[in-house]
Length: 231
Image: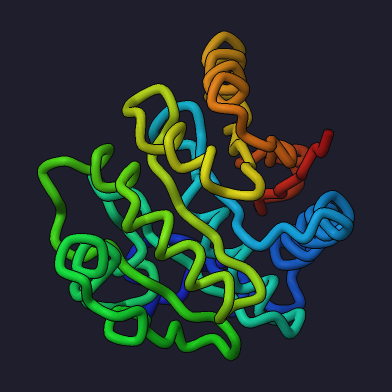
């Protein structure tokens, strides 16, 4: 059984702590599938979301950021869940300054980017929680921000709120090159998964695929496996 390190205050398992484990290998497999799906499309921005809360989309986003950084890419991981941000806990950072400082107060990208502690992986935390997240995400300042970070990073990953809770992820998915839907084994209801997919299709999102999270292989294995199914 893989134990979480005490330094991970969020309680999430990060593959940088378990480099040779099957847990980490699954994320390398997901990375390979994503590379295969987007390699000819020049995609640089990925949105990670789920249908509902508690399906593990923030854990998936964080570990994918680590996986791509370990491949040698310069990766920017952004906490775009402006209602219930968690990335500052995951990487033991202060919540501010963050993306909301940049969008609301014209801070520079350099002012809000933080070193994750993983070579090649940089993060932008949420910042002060705004009163109007959906309006902030849809604002032209977000469009300009995406244009700028595409010039500076090989891959940008957005950790967005669940699709069926608020409109934020649907709005942001239209701005990103690809979207990955996280599905929790034994928890996500099929009808909610279909509603989430329809919401993404309605916003004309490019659905790269889905990651099945929290899938137990069998009773003799105590680790969780992650799979990706691509279109």
